[in-house]
Image 1 (tube, rainbow, N blue to C red):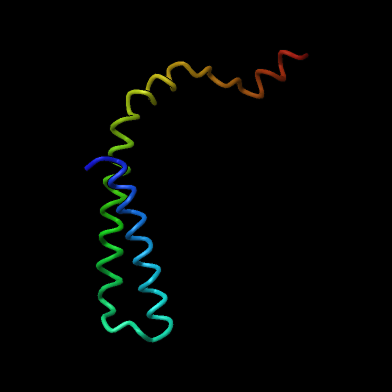
Image 2 (cartoon, rainbow, N blue to C red):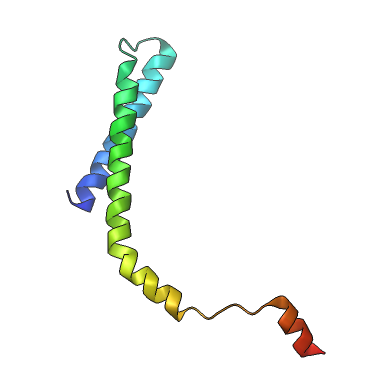
Amino acid sequence: MSMPDLQKQLKNSRQELFNLRFQMATGQLANHRQIRLVRNSLAQILTEIHMKERDSGEGQAAVAVAEAPKPRRRRAAAEEKR
């Protein structure tokens, strides 16, 4: 599934979860199991989104780490000032 589709599903699932929680608070929710099902589907969507982001950014992260300068230690910096 593409990222825009996943983002749309994520938004719809969050809205549905909000509506179910609202119904539960007002006493209108007939089936409490619906909340669990929506939370599970929400977790699956988020997992798929995170996996796609990790796969697409995995090569970029390795390059960024290799290019980043090594931070200087404070002790060494203090000794240089003396």
